[in-house]
Figure 1 (cartoon, rainbow, N blue to C red):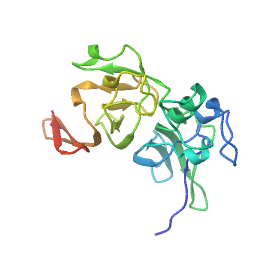
Figure 2 (cartoon, rainbow, N blue to C red):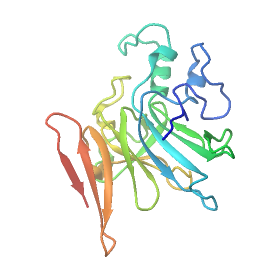
Figure 3 (tube, one colour):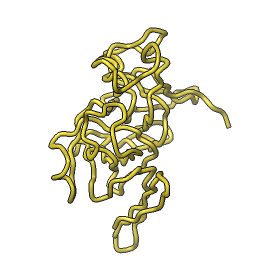
Figure 4 (cartoon, rainbow, N blue to C red):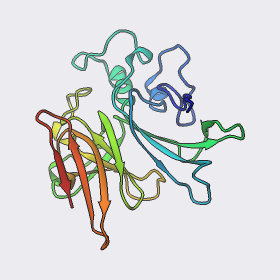
Length: 231
């Protein structure tokens, strides 16, 4: 097999920003970049496109790569507003359209309508039995570890934390959820699914039986960790 870089921290995902080239970004620029420490990902087909030639890639960004974001280290307790916004921009997920060229090499399709960042600064809704305990509009998701997908073609990204270490002013109860995102941008807003439990979500996978009942299995990456089953 061969390897090649497809999308690295600091690459521009959304239009309106240049990729990292040695200078630290403004908050507005960083919000459009690929975040740091890539983790879980899923590939989604595009109607009318051979999946071996192109599709959508949803990918998690678990933690900022501070060396390309700002000088020195990051301290949430003393960070100014711009530093906090930049740090929060580097977590969450990105969705990019990818295509294989005539030379067989894969690349991100710049300018695609599907290319989008969902960051630690973005707004999220909440659904399920505990949604009333969360903020009406939630700021950010973070520590996006591994991931999964639903049978109906949406992305599940997992928050491997039960607080917001990058912005401790936010209510801790807003974090620690599996977040459902439509990579095609056609369905509901990104939503934290409280029915799937609150813990340090590592990943999620589903199985469907003959009568179309679905079970989701989720890993808890805390100590002691365990596996949860949601039907």
